[in-house]
Image (cartoon, rainbow, N blue to C red):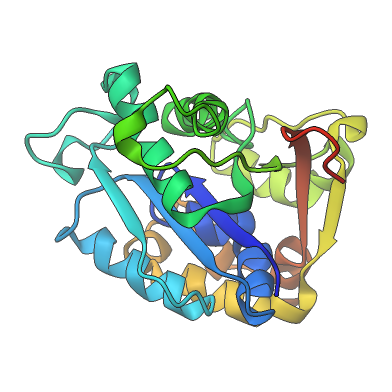
Length: 247
């Protein structure tokens, strides 16, 4: 039985776009798979889309929503702080609680750039996860969050210069930034073609984003199938090893 896998992402749709193939693969292999999403509150339209997307990936657990506001959409969590403005101890402590409950061998999240577009919520999630995975293994930090647990590694979803050409061109035409990393920074290149249909179904579940012209799900939905399959068939990761002796 595979060890548990925990994905921590900024927004609904990040889980499908950035790591949908790996999440679907892990769930299909029978490993416990869980998703934490920092922004959008339960009960909002995108929360329902997230639930449908996670189910489309084959993940049996409902998504765990922290319920903070999107940096650019205050209505995503009425009356709540924007994710980037949450006090550090509060943000890290909540993530620590999920890590200690799921007990993942690996945590998947955003890279330091916040992927290609550099969204502030993506970058902030990256920083909070790196703090939380260290804190989760230290029993005297956040003792109220459960028994200590140290993941072996964090996998940062990313895009190398050499693997971004087609997707980068699409984003550039939509007026978005394209922030890729040197090829040497990528430690895992994952062929997710066997799980591509699940990944695409999960992206389509984010209906509000498919309808938007400049959102990546909308951009992908207007591509010819062959081109879309090329974009979705490979995922890239940079590994951060945490536990001594981890493979």
